[in-house]
Length: 462
Image 1 (spheres, rainbow, N blue to C red):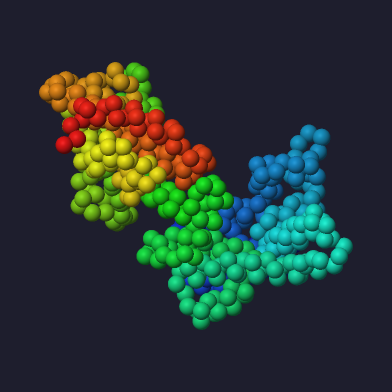
Image 2 (image 1 turned 180 degrees about the vertical axis):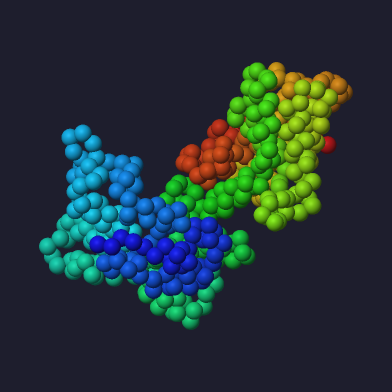
């Protein structure tokens, strides 16, 4: 059995994981049809690798006994039982055993073998369903043989792919052509196309597309994770994921922190850094110029400079440098105060409803709620990180300081109450991920609101 692959030929046609990030479903189908015509050239095997790295590993496994053994030691050591002698792995002998392991490795990437395995699972599930319902033996079954199960599997995959293209705005005429093209793809390539088409369809609203079909798809997707979630939950979580990715510490921040920790005790751990720095970062998007990562716009460049100054402020031993950061925190409270004032007035007159009075822009909500969470710093007595125990706070007017403190407490509680609106929608606001947290938290929220009201007299709502 010849296990040698034509590396250059396969490399030229391989769709890597990196390429998949920036490709449309239409482009994917063109590429997959091209791959479908590619034959690796040994015993009729048609195999698919996920990436260039996966392909390179495969080459080693197919020609090197040592690489073969290392793969199964990591993947499934029990598979090596046939190669074991009393003392160690028998790498030199037992060619038939090693051939069997290599065939198993290829089977896991073989279109035909994977399709048969998945079709058999469908068939077995159908039989179990009929037995459980008592219909077995009455001639009722979905598939009479494995080939029918494989056709049903293909139909199921194709229908799901067509639904995605429909959401993406394809006409009925185009959908008919797409269906014919999909039917010509093998099992593994259908899965590849289905994965990308699903992701593109789920995020179609980012490109201005919206429909009941799209919302139903997003809702079906999130309900497999949390029963109280819906299409809005999906979009909220996705928005915050994007927010987080664009509000990171500067690339050299960890180097600065490591340098600080070498000369200071206690060291600043990740929890401290997350609490005192990460939540305050301004948005910075990057692009690549001449192979170098650079801020995408002039505004991104200015924001990066601001972020660096904020980081340096925390790590500086010169207390006069801290004033920049505390002044920025004070400004954030003022910004949040103006934004939250209408909701605070509703809380004051008793008409605030956490289920209805929700901030439409979830990114703005997230920014303000993180700021409120982080304002007090990691340790309330730590003058390096805590706004309210800093020299900056001590230097401002006493009456304003009390008002500032009351505003902070009031808004912190209000945003805490609003957190439960997201909890009702299946979102854990500690990390903005999907999680079941109950479906009605009214009693908890009412208690929080009543506590918040105690700070209103000092807040000067006018």
